[in-house]
Length: 191
Length: 222
Image (tube, rainbow over all chains, first blue to last red; front, side, top):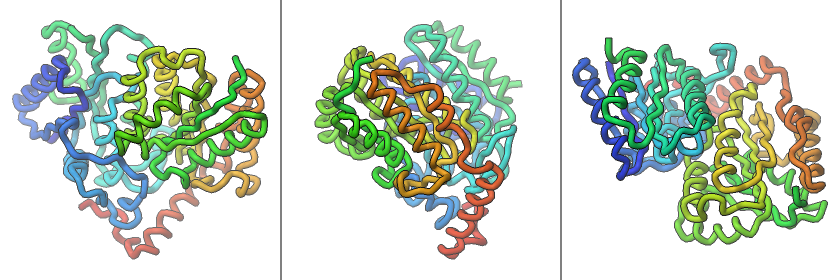
């Protein structure tokens, strides 16, 4: 099994460092292979919505940057781990610039899934999803929005398993560990 | 709500002037201009590529008493440059800096289901709250491929409801009211039955691939 970790957090985010270390350790213990990307250091241009990756160079983005590598990692994965500060309820721009580039991993065609129209994945396999969002203080509306976004992502990725974890800034390491282990069980990394 | 005199359209699509976001925004701006507003347009993709352009735009952003943010939906939410624009304006101008001003959000996407645009509009709403904007409402356009960046007044009957929704919105905003519920409902109606729309879009992709000589490679996994 293979995972890609997309870290869309800032360099000074101590919780995020702990989150990433814990997830990487659990993936290793469980025998998963994984790629782990620090997106703030990656050279990834935004998606141009040119649709070339659908109708001219199927499956391949023409933007020659780190996004090509990261997209390839995402396409080959069984699980995508999205780590981000909760930004107006959504993902940070650093995470989003990488996640928007997943489009070559989809087919252009519209197909029904769970009663809605979506683009099927190019490999025919789903991506399971785990999102981890950090927030400075409790905010019910934004936490729900972050979870709703992951739910919508799970439809787009046709995920069989998915979960969203919310962590408060300054949350104790044992509490962070407990929440992450529960989520990793939900997405099938831990038994 | 105070009647806006200076309105800024912020277009979130990388296709800039040739985007459906611009088509919708410009039609609304024309309606507001006719009723006396001064209007201006900026493209997020120009601002987020160049530091100087972003810094220069902040003055125009602050000068507006209404901002209309029109954006496509990319992978279930707002495109990365729109998120960056929101992060940067918040970081540079500060919490509550747009108090007394209004923000209207417009999201469009290719799919037929309105629900697929709701997260994007809710994110715009949360941004508005942090910046101190009063929320003037959110419009969601499904089946955006029917417009595909064309000028709304150049499209036939299929876009009639979209034009009507934007006229109603311009009228309401320039009368000091929020976006009417009827306009939101009209905007979210299908321009074509979804099964026909899906069939046409799928055919269009095959046709474009055939034109590029890759019709039989559409399912390739590189």
